[in-house]
Image 1 (tube, one colour):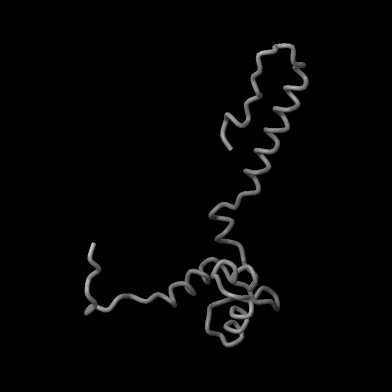
Image 2 (image 1 turned 180 degrees about the horizontal axis):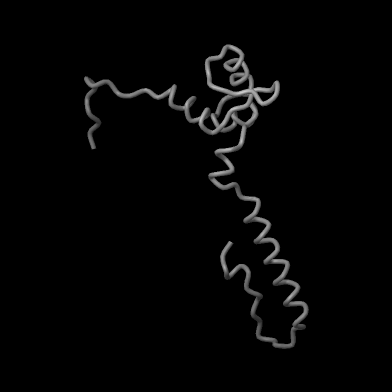
Amino acid sequence: MTRSDLAPPTEAGAGENTATVDTTLILRLTSAVEQLTAMHTVASLELRCFTPEEAAVILGKTENWVAENIRARRIPFTYVGRTPRLTAAHIRQIQAQGEVLPSKYAKPVAA
């Protein structure tokens, strides 16, 4: 959303009711503020615990894959009460576990 989206529409006829323009502007500003408050900050994502379903979406896997690996203790997780949850750090660790580096004997890629 930009400032021009918040500006009232300009028309050639100056006979518009000022109250109508102000109401429209207030509604646009309210919508913009609601959108900004709904956005997650980096700090809030770092503190958040994701369910296996939410983590599966982030990892591009199925919920079943995440649940099975939690049960087998192949991926890092934490318990909140009796339910397993994954933090942003856990998700980064899972992604790093699958990293494959090229062999030092591999031929370089031609540019």
